[in-house]
Amino acid sequence: MSQSAAPSAKKIQAIRGMNDLLPAESPCWQFFEAKVRSLMARYGFAEIRTPIVEQTALFARSIGEVTDIVEKEMYTFDDRNGDSLTLRPEGTASCVRAAMQHGLLHNQTQRLWYQGPMFRHERPQKGRYRQFHQVGVETYGFDGPDIDAEVILLSARLWQELGLAEHVTLELNSLGSSEARAAYRDTLVAYFEQHAEVLDDDAKRRLTTNPLRILDSKNPAMAEVIAGAPQLIDHLDDASREHFARLQALLDAAGIHYVINPWLVRGLDYYSRTVFEWTTEALGSQGTVCAGGRYDGLVEQLGGKPTPAVGFAMGIERLILLLETLDLIPAEARFGAEVYLLPLDDSATPQALALAEQLRDALPELSLTLHCGGGSFKSRMKKADKSGAALALLLGEDECADQAATLKFLRDDREQQRLPQHELADALAALLGHARHTR
Ligand code: ATP
Ligand code: MG
Image (cartoon, rainbow, N blue to C red; front, side, top):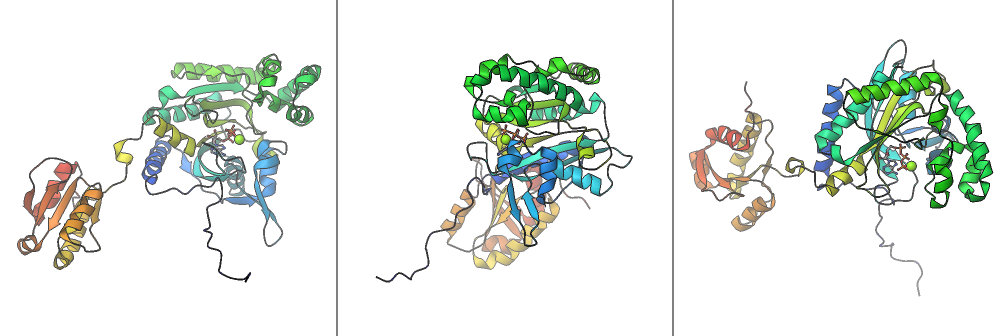
């Protein structure tokens, strides 16, 4: 039997954990993205876009060598020059790098936001992917709790506007200064050493590398010993304690509900003082939809001048999943043209093309699909119906001769109307509630 042969017919698939966004889903993403974009503008945040690939050292030095991300989740490779590069696993490090590189932190404050894909080699499951998308904000140069409150209020407004406010909870903690954390670390290690028999392998390893992360463990066998551990919140330095109290007072005054979660330590090394997460019960174990905090030490750690900083990142897939689960995606976020314009035979095509352009000139918000591809009357009408449009405009031989069109209601039981073409823009504007272009 011949071994050579036919090229493999196996079709190439996308990489596991990296998703295509299909046409049926993209309107929902666009709806979400439009909300975010407008919200950021209303809060005075400017967009920043950074490359998807950075030098590996940037993430290793900022996120921390002994974190899940750097230890086991990064997509790292050598490029053709032998430089070690990494697909960004999060946005903060790149944002600090860009802000420093372009002098954005020099004697000025910044309120920035970004959105885009992030990459982590995790086990794919619902709400957890290898390419996922985040929206994030980062602020620089503000050391008081007012900015902590402001970014929390920004996120709270987004939940409000998406209808999610009742489905998410704000969890809050303070990690104190790095000195306070170092002292607490010793207390914590001493405590866990007394309970070494219940620690799993991960925890034993973290005891010497990153003991605070033991508090993050989901291992039920360790739940009791973790619950009895000394709490960082009782070991805060005075300045951090005051900062945290003032933040709580600001949130109280703004009517924002929160729960203090002393076990909230976050997976990244760069946080100090305020940390927070917005969580939901509706998504199973992937319940954190937004997470952030203060990271006053990071700019200096990356070679800049000491610069106070606060930010957060939200996972877009989880938020869209939540909106879908709770059936909160509004009809306007479903795809479909409003009007389907239909030449009834090929001789009407030139006039149909011209009419479509006139209507698009007159009604800038109108979404109109022009029938293309010919077909019998029946198949054309079927396409019009399948398009999901509410209205069809029919252009047959008679209509063309009279410079008219027949307006057909595809979703309502209403008599069709024949209108002169020059009256169509006004008629559609009235029917669809669009503004007329005036010039
Ligand atoms: P988790 O504890 O769920 O692993 P994390 O602490 O690693 O989250 P962050 O680095 O704080 O997550 O990222 C902020 C947000 O980005 C998360 O709250 C989540 O909504 C989203 N996110 C993080 N990792 C993923 C992923 N692999 N897939 C989808 N969304 C993610
Ligand atoms: Mg993670």
